Every structure is written in C-alpha cells, then in structure tokens.
Length: 114
Image (cartoon, rainbow, N blue to C red; front, side, top):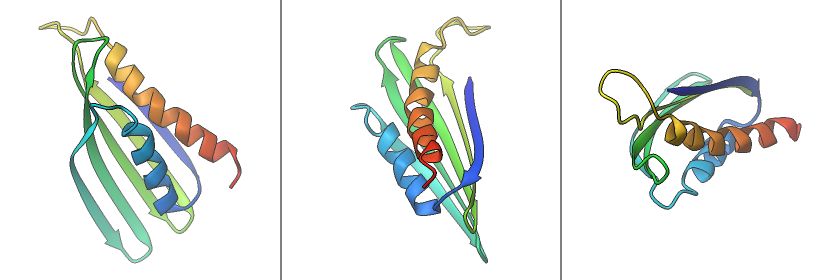
C-alpha cells in the first residue's frame, strides 16, 4: 500500500479534475465507483480507480478522497493491490506507479500557487 496526503488551498472542482485526468492517463484505468457528500460549504468526493499494472502483472486500485471547505482542500490517495504473494507483499511497483501519476500532478498544482 502506498499513500499520499496533502492539505492546501485550491479549487475543489479543479482538484477533482486534475486527479481524474492524472489517473485516467493510463489506458487501462477505470472508475469503479464514486460517492459525493455535501453539507453547507463542506464537500467530500471519494473515487475508487482501478488499472492493470503491466510491470506487476496484476490489477491495482487507488482510493481517492477529496475534502473541501471553502478553498481549504485535503486530499488522501491510497493505492493497494498488486502483490502476488499470499502472506506478505513482495511487489509494490504497481501501487507506487499508480499513485505517482496523481501525486506529481497535484504537487504541480499546489506549487503553482494558483
């Protein structure tokens, strides 16, 4: 399992679009399901992505949660799956690669100072 979490200021819709675009760059990526919640000016979006990891030879998932309160944003992205072992993980290449695309795109957005 690999994890990326950040708190920053930004636009909720822009952040969701950046995350979706980054993950869906992979030809085998798909959205498995999603959920939305809104209460006043608090918004929460959870999306579960899945893709095939060519390097690992298996499927990996990425659970993305974006929380927005005004321009305050919190992102939590956790990838999992991909190991071929029964009792412990011996292969995390796919998990880390899946998460890297998203984290690089979000870091660019955050560092742009938009």
